[in-house]
Image (cartoon, rainbow, N blue to C red; front, side, top):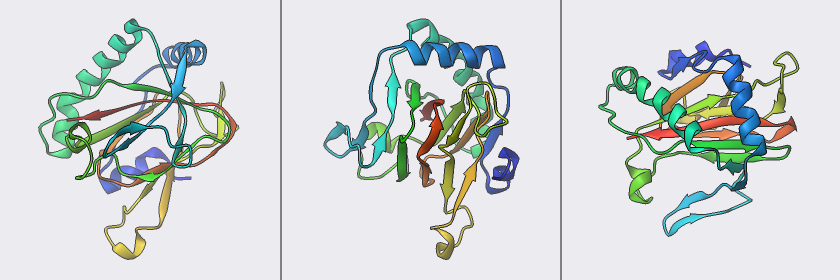
Length: 199
């Protein structure tokens, strides 16, 4: 799979070591032991669980952890605004996600015109990986679960071609919220990420 830097050619924002290895482990441990609930899918009538479309767990982490992550995201606001050429002033509360074996998210965009207001306002989506993909990505690696982007080539004939990004601990990738992407089914291990959407 392509290294993260490959995606900068298509205008995506990539930053390594947003969290160091120790913090990634601490966050994984907290997500693993926290109560959680099935993640929802935004629908026109509200949020609902749809296991055929998305299967993952949203962990209910501590207020202190939310504050820490929000601080890191706030620090990135000016750089992301500059990179994407849009004034970003706030973001949705981060979600702390656990993908277990068999969990996935089908191809989707994070911003749609016929969605609720909080979805329509999204301009930039961000994913922070807390562990890595593949046998060489210890500790706590996983297999499968690739974050895959579609429509990068700017040609409708290639819209169905997906480019998978290899996750690694502490890696942040940000992209326009209308860009179609998916999470492939996790085939082994557990995949830990934090996601948010900038307005």
